[in-house]
Amino acid sequence: MSSQLAGSASSVRDSDSGRPVKDRKAWLRWFFGPVDIASLAFFRMAFGAIMVWEVCRYFGYGWIGRYYIEPAFHFTYYGFGWVQPWPGDGMYLHFLALGALALFIAAGFMYRLSMTLFFLGFTYVFLLDQALYLNHFYLISLLSFLMIFVPAHRAFSVDARLRPALRSDTVPAWVLGLIAAQVGIVYFYGGIAKLNADWLRGEPMRMWLAARSDFPLIGPLFTREWTVYLFSYGGLFVDLLAVPLLLWRRTRVPAFLVLVAFHLMNANLFSIGIFPWFMIAATLLFFPPSWPRIAARLKVGELFSPAAWSRTGRQTQPPRERWRNGLQSVPGTFSLGPGKAAVLGLLALYLAVQLLVPLRHHLYPGNVNWTEEGHRFAWHMKLRDKEALERFVAVDPANETATVIRTQDYIDLDQAADMSTRPDMILQLSHHIADDLRENGNEDVEVRALVAASLNGREPQMLIDPGADLATERRTLAPADWIEPLEGPLPDPAGKNPQERMFGPGFGKYQREIRQTVRAEFSGMEIIRPERPQQDSGRDAAGGGG
Image (cartoon, rainbow, N blue to C red):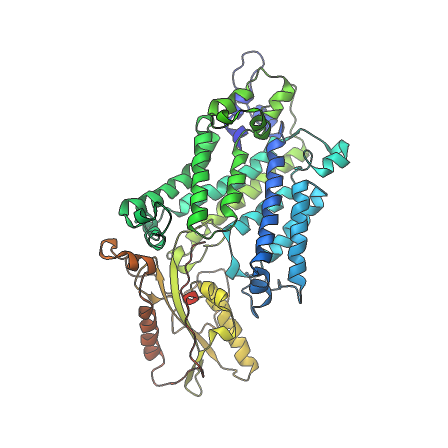
């Protein structure tokens, strides 16, 4: 839903009266009519350039080996257990190919093939490990899929230069509308997700800001209560109101400047990679489709003037100029043939899925930030701070023994940081541990997970039913009855000093909760501990922001 949607009622006009035409055919003429390709071409170039940057980051920080080659076990997504990393140096070659494809996309060279291969290659990487889930990686996968079908290479591209017959100054209006709608969904559902009791009471923003009190200039203000609520409610309203304010011509430029400031602040406060920069580039889709041409003609002082951006879209311009400014001439008749009807149907189906999937967590009982059921693919971004300490215990009922499992024998600390707070990943690791023990002759083994967790600074409590044998629990999409319900209120912020706000419950509280559960659950059994104690590190306490 880009800016041409906002002006559509005024751009489709009766040729005699000049009044807006509101019949269905006029709207369909607008929907399939031509708009300037410049904005779409800019987004193609920005998309490719940012993806090249991200590939370089993965090589520069050593993340390819760390995340995809060194771990012996990967937390695959439900139904995608067959997706596994390439052997040997295959992952390095895979990322090199992604970087080359991203360059081709930015240049518009062999665009359709490059975008198709990039979508397949990037989505493959995304599906390798749930522990690496990022909302913006999900968004990139969705947008790269959509852009396969979008003619973003018909201008400002190598393809258009090599094949003159391909060149075009316009694309159908629905093309820009679809990409902008996907970006708008991210903003809107990001705001909807913040409408929860913890966020409205300032958590976990209170803890996050206290941890960044060393921030330049404004850091000392981060422990003030008014600052906490300014950031919490400011983020809520920025996300909720972003789309309507971007669609309205008079508020578009101020809204964009606020969003730029919002993303830049996030980039400096949180470690969220390319996401702020990607969203800034994507938000420009809400400007008139010809904004790159307009910006090239404006003086520096006019760039921030809403009037300067709007005056170029008057109907007094010739048809070609109206196309360039996101407007459409609507002469002649319109026929909704099978091809256009198919486009409408497919767009409606895709958008219906995107609107419904983020709401699926309402089908599950409990607090989604605690159970994690329906949390992914729902644009729940930087919403909670979740810390946990876990112990896996293998129980042999016949010998009445309970053996404490060394988690690091199966996964690394990066994976453990995410796994310990996410019940579905705890179940997946339990199955893996049980399979390994059975292969070593322990046929009747039970696997219990003792997980003490804290959500947004609450006192630690058990996340998983310690009496549940997770080795026999099936991995399904149905609600899990072995997840303990969230109990206990948020702590009173008035009784917490900045140090307590920063770290939440003391680490010793998690250990005491585990020890008490061990004594209660395995009373009368011989408890066998590993030869050397499991190393607890800061990575055991997993913040659950993204």
